[in-house]
Image (cartoon, rainbow, N blue to C red; front, top):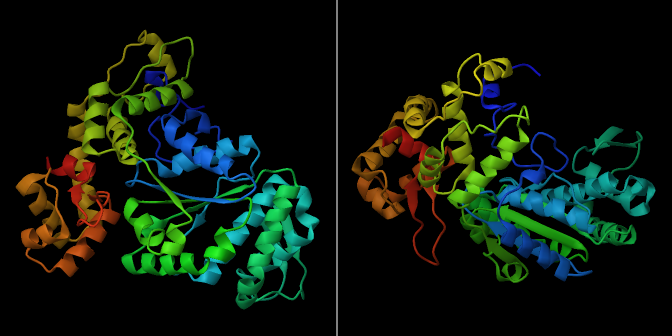
Length: 429
């Protein structure tokens, strides 16, 4: 391993990665999962309580709060309990149709079984599923298809099903696959659907219709346990929109980790990345700075970790190595909030000019100049910016997608409230 500046802190590398934890990933294993014990227990209990039946759950929360990591931890726990699952998820995308969504679900169910029970490849249900999965990817011809590391192929000239066949045959094949799952000794199969928060309002409405139309043929199979992940608004727009879908889903909102839990999460990462276990762990950033960042980012853990990585890295002693650490007798300094702010403010201000046009920068500046801690609705922003509410909606979507504005969870039928993100606060405070 090449020496890095992180060695000065007795760390192998940066502890501030933002990727979700993953099963059997040595760099970011699920053993580093911290907090969410109650939420994880509730999700797991609902699956276990379903017995031979299926279950349907939705996990909601603000962007970056840790929804996907929670579901990955759930899948790890359920695999240990005897359920089939994989790290991958089914993305719900803007141009979906009932055919494409059903095809991707069927594909991941097939891949999950193949990854966990490779000997079932010759089963009639698996062969039928392979043909249907292939029909959503190619129209004719042959060739090989590698799925979860297991080779599969259809010879040239094999008749392939059409998307229309998928609608007719898909539900039957999915039912047969779930029968195969239970016959293989597994208690069921856990499937993860994600990406809802990236849909526009129109796309969310279309997805809600697809979920309604696919309710009986996709969601109601025995042994199939579906977990859908999205922001509160996305779940409201897609899952809660139609009574027939709302009735079969339980929704679990998750709140941001408390400051002590974030500090516990960082401590677990420091321990995981310790370079020399004979020496003490040296946190590269002080606790006060972590607390302030958590408050600024309102529980957006991904944003906090990004800010720590962006802010701490330039403040490390350049050229430091494990040898220099030893020579210094473990001497070190913790990076504080003053140094972080001095590094992050110009960096994020410069980035702002590369991702937003001057008009939207003016919108942010006007908001922050009045009061960066203000909570706004679309109506109040329309008055502040002197533009129509339809234009406000477009601007907010852009600012939210780029991470400069956060939409707070909707309270009943009240108007959605918006606040500046931690990144914006670091730029303008």
